[in-house]
Amino acid sequence: MRDGDVVVIGGGYAGVRLAKRLDGTARVTLVDRKEVFFHRIASLRAGVRPEWTMAPFIPYDRLLGNGRVAVGKAVRVDTAEREVVLATGERLPYDVVVIATGADYPEPARFSGTTAEEAAKSFAGHQQNVATADHVLVVGGGPSGVELSAEIRLARPDARVTLAHSGPTLLHSTGSERAGRKALAWLESHDVEVRLDSFMSPGHDFGTYRDARGNVVEADRSFWATGTTPNTLWLRLAGHGDWLNASGHVKVDRMLRAEGRLDVFAVGDVNDASELKITPAALAQADLAAHNIRAYLGSSGKHRTQSRSYRPIHRTPLIVPFGQADGVTMLPVLGGETAVLGGRTTTLAKAKTLMTPYMRRQLGYSAA
Image 1 (cartoon, helix red, strand yellow):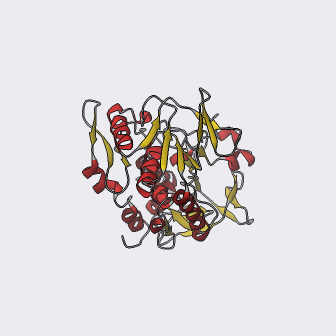
Image 2 (cartoon, one colour):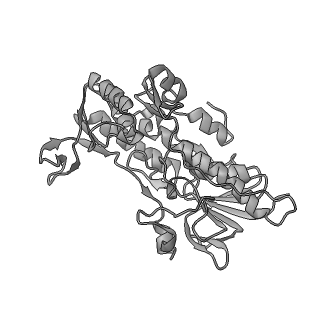
Image 3 (spheres, rainbow, N blue to C red):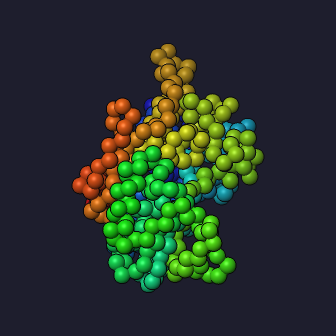
């Protein structure tokens, strides 16, 4: 028997995990504007290599055995009527609503349009631009910028590739200087020009860029890997600006509930939990929120489940591929240290397949 209506808004990593966890114990509706799951981890390679174009797209149709997926855009959470309102006018009643709308990423890690065909067309455009460019500029030396620079270099060994980073070391947000040095050594050994302490902005002329010192870089194409923006503008427009902090993230308590609400949860990139916004953290939040939602829905039972507090993950394995056969893996160890592992481990864990078989299985499909 399934008790309670749970509406999960957003079908990314956290939303899919949570919806699947609750499918057997509640009446789940997963809402997403896309018709397919977007495996963002594979998107950087898909934006460079044609053979990877369709890899990030996995249908939702096998995810839920009991619940349903509603393709549409949520525009409002009506807390008085306890309904989620879609752009089509459809109203979805809820006992619990989960905001899992994620964040907006720069191209090519963005799903363009609402269908796989539209997004694939966008990937094809990036692939063509990379294939014909004489000089490609990547701005941002975090994990995405390093990974994308490596993908471009391996796809275009004859082109000039520049990575500009505003910080003093690559991967500095990870806290591992050694990993940053390994990334720098790989890029420079593959003739990628790395500019550190180089904050870039578009110049006055198309195809020109300036750093903070006024130096000009000319490039045929540029990709900006400089951060993300939480997808919460719709909440502000719907009158829920008080749910958000200054950066636009949903403010959550230790149970991952929106502050002041017992029946509204927020998980993944969209909330203000103080940790790296990476997939393992999103999945951990989804698991804990699923437990707390079960506790909330069964709160009147004789053997009710106790809610749990979320502990932000400040030390988690982080894998940065350098193409399909190399990369760097940061693995926390006892004593607060971080072990930095190289190509073999990274290839087996992520670089070769970008976890695509794993995500296909999560959505009910075969690994191939």
